[in-house]
Image (cartoon, rainbow, N blue to C red; front, side, top):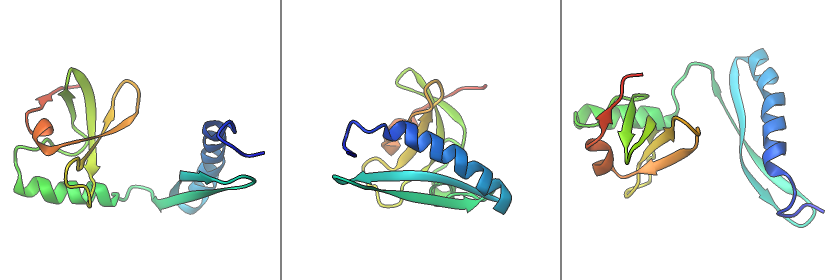
Length: 125
């Protein structure tokens, strides 16, 4: 039975590894994103984009950064709350927490308000 005890993290890891070889063949970066499960089945969302192209979040962040020079550059590593984060992009429909950032040590993705990123401390890696 497929339920919350099913190893979705392991499945996602194995599926992304298998999709990586398919993506190399077609010049795409392919990954599974959302997994929704029911009693006897589950559905996955697959995201594919051209290798080297920018995501919509990255494009939106670059646009916002043109008008707000106090924001750090895209993919810059900054110190927020004593931890190092890499700026990944801007969520289009998020008004309170629009900035996407990945923690450098754990590779977990977080969202931040604009004011906390404006007062960042730049880290040179």
